[in-house]
Length: 195
Image (tube, rainbow, N blue to C red; front, side, top):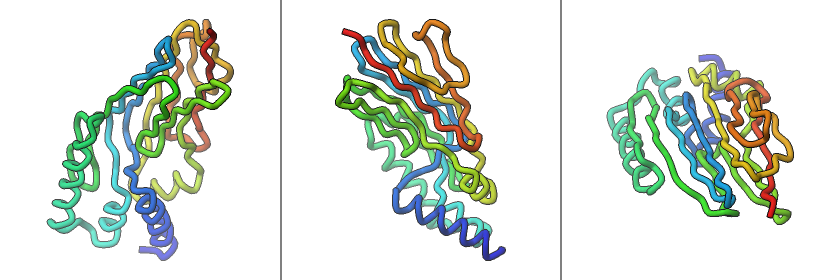
């Protein structure tokens, strides 16, 4: 394996280990904003353990002990009440179904990729992590191709301040959507609830 690839894999894996995250791979994520500024959310798709992928790249496969450890991690994930399904499917991948609710003003951080925050000014920001060109290239070298969709449903009565959705309703309320996986795409929607 080329030194450059090993360095890239190591850098990504180290960053992932330090943040303790799985990387969403193929998925649909949905956030439904309610008229009272509370929200519900869903994630359905696969996520990958980059450290395990790095080991597979280096050794060709994972040991039985490593496979069992990853399966045990799925069991730990299921202890979170929002995780409805977490199954280790092999090759460092998990099938995940996550859904939950947040009260108005309560932040959401989902898989270190999707975020909802409300500022002191009352502006709610829904965003997702941007994928940089180098990150996409490094992930592709590891066999990880991010391919997902984020949909945010905005109720009537909410004022959309700004958005960069690839698809949006003409009236302000309705479904805003983004395709994730392209370089530089950083979904963001800012809204405020009028009294």
